[in-house]
Length: 294
Image 1 (tube, helix red, strand yellow):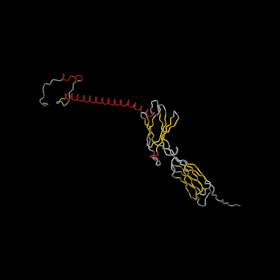
Image 2 (cartoon, helix red, strand yellow):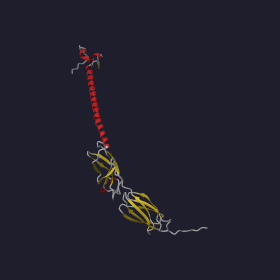
Image 3 (cartoon, one colour):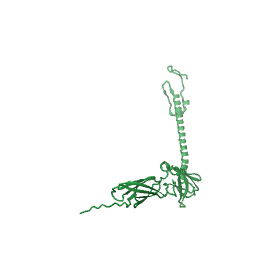
Image 4 (spheres, helix red, strand yellow):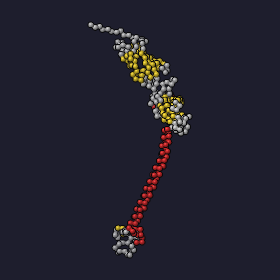
């Protein structure tokens, strides 16, 4: 024996298993299940979104017969905090949750340039990669002094650089740049952080390394230049000696050329230097050898 029992739907029950599926910078996807399985008619849900930063409320209506409901909340702000409440349209019991949207990214390519009595912070515009960022919002700059263990707010700028003065010698600083916060220090962007090591000479460690590299280059470059000049002069001297020797040999060979024999006549090696003294005396000319007068 058995009996079939059909439960009467209770529309006063809250939605079940409310949770966040995905959260972005300007939207959030939430999901829940109906108060009871297999609804036999359309159910109207009220989705209330409370902005915990701006203190504003928005209500959206969702009508569906599905047991599992997925809904996307749009037009949220990056880095925002929200309280989401889902309940049936008849104001039954509610299910709630909190979501935080993804903040704006950190600025790229944060760099430090050291001047005589101050430093300059440079970074790329956040609008290049964040369509939700407007340059008029500006950037916040913070500084952390590790020696004093204090964090200071340096100011706000709409430019892509910031001047920092009055740094103390021997202190190490960390600088951070982020999209400006909205509404009492909330809805901030992710910070880009860079360490600045203040040495005893008041130089940045990176600048000190650059200085040392410059000193080495100042020594190596002149030495290489002198070596190249010396090698060049040596090649010129060798070339000139080679040309001089070649010309001397040509002149010497021409002076000992015999037109009658069709070749040059050389004496022994000991007599090469005294060719003028040991040259044979010309006694006459043969009838069959033509005389050439230059």
